[in-house]
Length: 94
Image 1 (cartoon, rainbow, N blue to C red):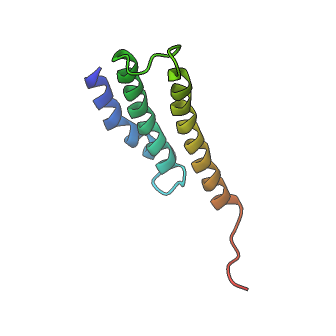
Image 2 (image 1 turned 90 degrees about the vertical axis):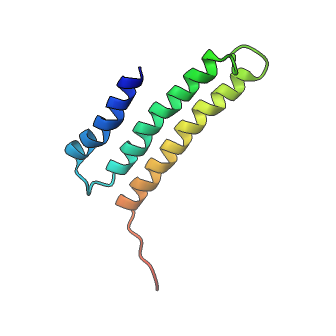
Image 3 (image 1 turned 120 degrees about the vertical axis):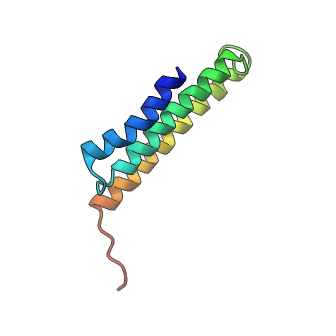
């Protein structure tokens, strides 16, 4: 698994740049949330395997949902800011 993750970390940024180019505003977004998702999922796997969070036990289901919703929330919020920057021009000054 470690070799697969390291190969992904090596290949993923290069693939994004090849597909989108360096100047595309979505390149850093996919880089950030693509590698962030891998790191996040590895962390969730460790949490679940160590039984630090057991869905169905007390409030663990709630907090597990908070973790997932938080990642999705910030990814969507960041995407909304990128879309706003691209499609809603700012007219500064008066």
